[in-house]
Structure formats: structure tokens, C-alpha cells
Length: 303
Image (cartoon, rainbow, N blue to C red; front, side, top):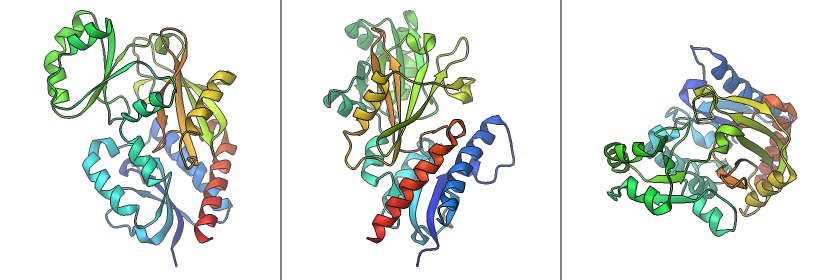
């Protein structure tokens, strides 16, 4: 007999935080709305740090990734934990899909599936590649570089003109540690922002528009970005749903981040299956919808 139906996965900062600010309050509210929705369906739920070595992962039927926003800082530990925990409880979304989604090389799969992404150059660790050569070959004079495993804009830089060549020492240092992506800077991120499309069971639920603060290009709210509700175009909704239907099984929840590229065409810049912020606080019924899908998933485990 399992002690819990669902464990909501977070990181240590959001279990019982001493510090409180608007950002932390939002995280706690988001997790709390899902916990309440699960409890309302009669599911025994608890919230735990994924890296809690004292917790018995055999004691829960399922684990749902929510605010595990330190995994990329402890990546080897996380990978080891993930490989072990998947044998102890059912993961939502699936272990195979989470592993696939951990590294942004998955964008190459999206491209191979005829889904639009920004033009990207993937650079392997220890390659010794000159950043200036990449930009010259691609005819880019304004670029973004970011690790293939990252979050919260960690080690993400925008560079233009002479800055690209001047960054070479840092570039070697960074690429000696991990794989990177180089992309042309997408000017519409500044002008129009980034649309985050939330889907449950493969169907559109709601969306938000994320915009960077003046003078920045990072849309995350921990960098001062703003977020507001938006109703995307049918083209963007269809693109998000088309992307998620390429995966089998269909993930219970996901977020597809879409921008207009420099040619004003909608492209996917992220497909988040692991621990996407879902902005339940802007549509509380979305937490109820996810809870329903989780209950159905648990019922299927029994059958």
C-alpha cells in the first residue's frame, strides 16, 4: 500500500522558505493550486524536494515535476536520482520524455519533424570552435549563446559585432564545460515578447505573453520580465498542438514557447515537459484540468 498518490516535486528553496518575495509567493501559489486540485479529487498529495534523501520514493504512486528549478545546477546528481526514482514510482511526464527534454538537442528533432525552430548551430563540449567563425559562416552579426542544458537564462549571452570576437576566451571556458547552442538574435523577443502556450492532454488551455524589461532580452520574471494573459492566434495554438502530438504518449502537461522570428514567422524556441511554469494563477481551472488528467493516469496504473 502506497502512502501517497502524488508527490509534487520542487527544490529545497520552495518547500518551507524562510525568505518571502513576490517571486517565491508565486511559486508557492502555483504549487498550492495544483495540490488543492489534487486533494479535491481525493488524491493524497505531498510536496517534496526532489533531492530529499530522507524521502522514500517507493511510498508514492506518482511524482509530478513542478518547481524543480535547480536540476541544471546539480545535473549529474539529478540524472542519477532520475534513473533511480523512475523504478520506484510513475513519473509525470514519462521518464523517456523527460530524459529527451533535458537537453536542448531535442530542438533538432523538432526540426526533423518539420516543426519550425530558429536556425541553430550546436557546439559540442571541448570542440575548440571559434565563435566568430560560426557567426561569419552563418552571416550573423547579432547572436545568442546558451547551454544545451540550462534554465533561467543561465550562461546565456547576447553578443553583437565586435563583442562576438571579444567573447572568445569566455566561449572556450564555457564550451570546455558543456555543449552550447548558437542562434541568431531574434529581435522580436524585444519588440513583441514570447508567448508561452500551456497544453494539457495535448490540448490548448491558456497562454501568457512574457516580455523583457527595458534594456534586457531575458523574459524570465526573475530578471524583471513581465507576464500577462494573452489569446494567441490560431496559427500559434495549432503549432503548439502539432508539436506535442509528435510525442507518444501525449504528455499530460507541457508548455510550448513561441516567438516570431526575424522573418516574422512563428517558431518554437522551447518545448517544456519537465518543470514548466504553467501560470495556474491566471487560470485556476487549468490546475483542476491537470489534476483530472493525473487522476486518470493513476486509475490506469491500477488497471
